[in-house]
Length: 542
Image 1 (spheres, rainbow, N blue to C red):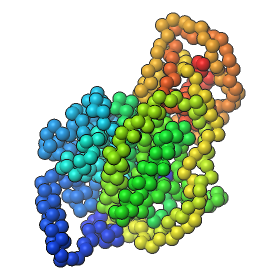
Image 2 (image 1 turned 45 degrees about the vertical axis):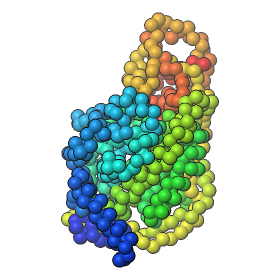
Image 3 (image 1 turned 180 degrees about the vertical axis):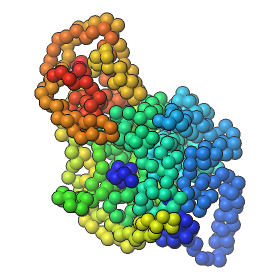
Image 4 (image 1 turned 180 degrees about the horizontal axis):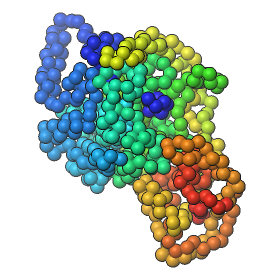
């Protein structure tokens, strides 16, 4: 996926070809009175919209994507047009010192206290995590304009929207024609995947090596959104869908969250978008050429380094949206906009029940947390594949790919769930040594409240004795490692200055995943915990 698989904008002629291929802008002829009234109504709406700010793609007929200055100017114009209804602030800084913009709609102010005091369902929209995947950034601007114009009255009654339009703002400012090759527009170029450190923000939500990811998890802790939508674009396998999606994939996502998403919410979104002419399917890919794995439609990764998986592990709802790279740019923006609209319509209609489900999660601490997992076998379903045509980029001559209209059905196992292979019963607390300030800072960013011992204290603890360390590959500037060993019960004295992390809902599962030595996405796995001796320095307190 552009979002999870591979590191990867038209000149007017190319855009016109793409618009025709996607049916964008097609008109249905007719001269009935009803049609005339409809046309007049559309003309009035267009006249009103003409007075509202337009996004950079709208101004350039989808040849270009928005720079940060475009987004800021658009939001400033909306705020001036609707005084007191759109609140603009920031939630942190990028590696290069740019402010990370946050927009709040549906609350009397932008602070976490003002948002939480509304009692409404809180929804966070995150766009531009990979700055070559620009559709979410453009769609959220359009949605804010629509909401302020009164097009979604149910949202105003039931929802607060928190919008992060430029998560990877540094990457967004590195627009180049060669970024994200093969994607079908915009021909004016897109930003780059990584942040200015060269790190992937969507691999950083557990280790927190980037200021952007630290800022975002602080936002999650402060505002505690009930729902998070993470908006991406995908390449990968040539399929016949306009958008693919995924719920949180960690197997310790609370069951009520997983069932609501898989059994109700996502099927409702699929029906709503089908009514608008879009085909949707669970995110996945076929095996790479040369891969000996049995053919299957396989999702990505369960680990909470990925934003939606982190949100699920925190006991909240999350939806991943992946527009298809080989659609024309305008169609990708439209399908992303329609997906978010349908998701928010569902949230508004079921806001009371969604809040109640989150409250139930918070009241029920987990008895078991998955530390490692594998893909389940999946159920067989019909997957729709399609070929692509090659179109020359009008300015570079490089190939761009465009989805063909024909559809080829294929019966395949759809492997989109993970099952635990190693679990732990969370302790009542973890104890970290006095010198663990770096880990404490990472935990603090996640919202954990640690207590520091003012004096030595005798405790009964469980200690992990390391038998083997296996170095892994270097990934995202970290040397990965795998620890093996055994647990032993000990009576010992914790020194003054030790850090105690009480394990309480709703983040008990996240605490275990971050701090357990056998976790496949914890501090130990990322090489963040000093393990020079034969004892893991973080203790369980039962």
